Image 1 (cartoon, rainbow, N blue to C red):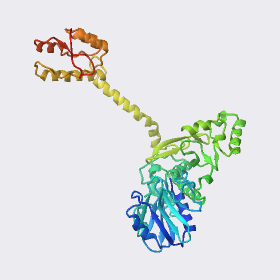
Image 2: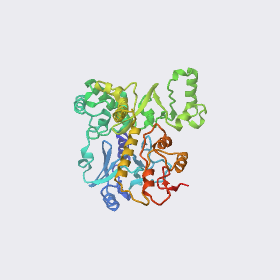
Image 3: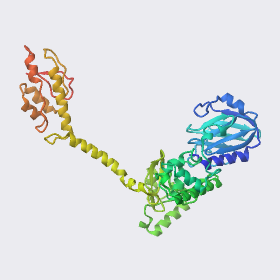
Image 4: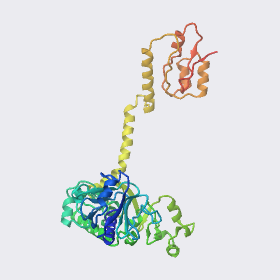
Length: 466
């Protein structure tokens, strides 16, 4: 997803190539989910003939300052992207549009042609972005509701620690809160917490001033470095978690696959070096990797991923999939005990279920299923007692226990069966159930005795006994 560095790279590209140029033509998509609050014709009329004065950004939001209002603003969402024809604008880790796609892309939501022929497009393949036309974007939500920009308005260490000490929420969730600090998204939050050695679920108010200072420094370094390289992930430091967090697969840096083994020392050093040399030799073209390499199986389905020999785990924090290294990022303080007790939550549920079973047990030590049968039998008996007896066809009662074909045949033959036969039919270890056969035979005067077929399908007609 585009975060502060990616949006800043788009802003810089616009600033470098589009400032001072007049909009000659505009095409706005007829997509009310993305184009928010204005019709495409009105949007076009507000753009054509205007000159782009500057490109501004706060957090993950970008807007174009024209020579007169209103101004177009862009909230990038999950897959929003700026493309300038003929200009290399940084792509995201999972780019929404490829260079080989048609121009303008079928996913284009905002397209303008400038007076010098340059063309700019804002695309959104997944339609979570918002494109608005506002008189003053900075004074309107969502921009007006954003916290300080992580790059342009960084907090001091004291300000950060003071703010954290008041927040009783998980630190990962807090970093994702754009009203707390704007511009930090999922991958940046994971990266700074990994580098600061802070667990994503650590409560913000429990962080010491030392941890807050470390976190402050990591935010500054990660954001500034990512911006300096125009969010080009291939230029991120090799030791960053970023390279290993995507899809739980091996990382890729500068076009070369990083083959990370769970324990490289289990393999001969010579062989390990041969693996790296082979990957470099073929330009990390996985189709040329030997079939015996573990890489191929890991590409087909997610496996455990490692960084520096330490396993990366994936949890949900702040409502987002979160990558962290349990061996380095540990819960501290009171939460350390809670982390150990987490699996007990499932155990306690089972225990509660077990307690319920114990409470339902009768004097015979019957389990819950037996108790349910008793309840059903009692309920059926009550209904039979209340039902008036009269000749004719009566509705069939549902039977709890399952009967076999042999049971049905025995029932047909045993027209005068008693309660002992019922034990035989259903197994002597089950609860006895009152039978309706005797009472039915008594009320059906002048007709051959009939007996219900002991079958689960109670809608079947009763059979006459020969």
